[in-house]
Image (cartoon, rainbow, N blue to C red):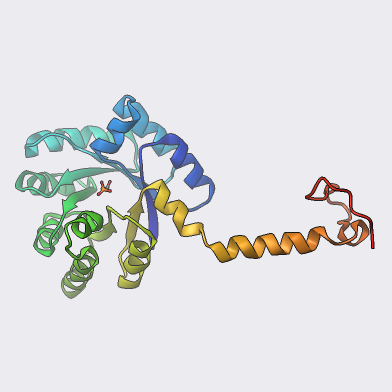
Length: 236
Ligand code: G3P
């Protein structure tokens, strides 16, 4: 499963990219607004950091405007994916853009019927918002299962991009269902790494190592390693 970062923050994107963790980036008007930077230069910079799909959302309410914006976004960089909302106008724009070979991420999806229509319109990605469904006591991951079944039944090639991810279990469930991508905030991506047993296990390894005599620890050719503690230890 591919992992995307749901952020327009350059520092977060650079850090996540340095781990080899992300295959793409999703943005939306709220995430871009948080950065307070010019839209096109910011998205261009993101494209230069991550060599993968970068979603950039239209803000027109009518299909013609979305298509016009989408065509200008696509000229920015080869990896740009145009984001359109799951509305009648958004479906019209998706159909027109996809027929011009412009890849569209249809966003703000909250039902299986919406996802079916997006696939029929030619969506490249579908973004069901699982966290916002959970927030209103609906089952976000059940929607992903339904979409996966429907798309598999009819051979739709639209990729399922699980969005509005709130915690690591959303990522695990998305992978178990067979979603194509999960996009998540930096905080959730960081949480995927953390485990208290890893931290305690590493601390124990290093404590045991530190207690060895210097000559045992010598690593010929490696830079001289200073003992972790400032205390000098008598060799046993
Ligand atoms: O890409 C969609 C995502 O940014 C929405 O997440 O947490 O606002 O529901 P959230």
